Amino acid sequence: MSKYKVLEIKQSVFEDNNKQANLLRKELKDEKTFLLNLMSSPGSGKTTTLTKTINALKDEMRIGVMEADIDSDVDAHTISQTGAKVIQLHTGGMCHLDADMTKQGLEGLGTEEIDLAILENVGNLVCPAEFDTGSSKNAMILSVPEGDDKPLKYPLMFSIVDVLLINKIDVIEHFDFDLDNVKKYAKKLNPNIKIIPISARTGEGIDQWADWIREEVAQWNAK
Image 1 (cartoon, one colour):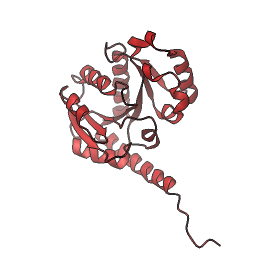
Image 2 (cartoon, helix red, strand yellow; image 1 turned 45 degrees about the horizontal axis):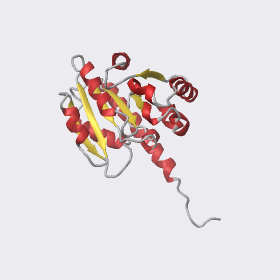
Image 3 (cartoon, rainbow, N blue to C red; image 1 turned 60 degrees about the vertical axis):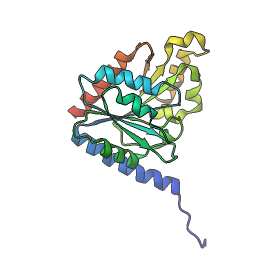
Image 4 (tube, rainbow, N blue to C red; image 1 turned 120 degrees about the vertical axis):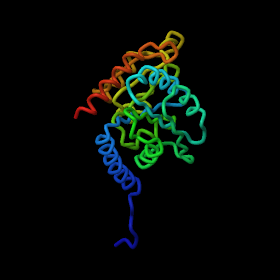
């Protein structure tokens, strides 16, 4: 017989986080606050996309943004220019946010007068995919310069998101990027994924993206 105990830490951490995430989701549901978890690689145009999104919706919804980063407030400063309520979250070196960290961020942001809370997660396609933040929906951005093979390299991320924004399509002709391949790979991993090509620079596709958010927020509040 073994004289020591074996503890599956990773499994335990995920189980505890999932419980906290479900509790947070229920609280947000009761408050009628929709939480969108937005993920991507660094340089995908996440903050620019977020700025365009806020501008498209700010006259209809009270929007709050949590900017998560290892150690920076550059993005929070940019988003503050939109007039949305914003708070900066420093992760202390961690490459993701979990449910407890998200709850702390929401408490700092204050959800009493927030219809749409957006979490701009830490920029990478690995860690954020593993932790349920308690969000109502998950979204990710894949930019054209990153390549069309990312669903093959980071399958978990593509399998857990509700919507995929393919950004920088205005420069697609300058890159070896097959849009149909991305759609095929992503749909194979996640048959229900919504795919919206956009250009945060030109605004192309932002209306369709904003419409998706409107519909999801309405459904969230109706249930």
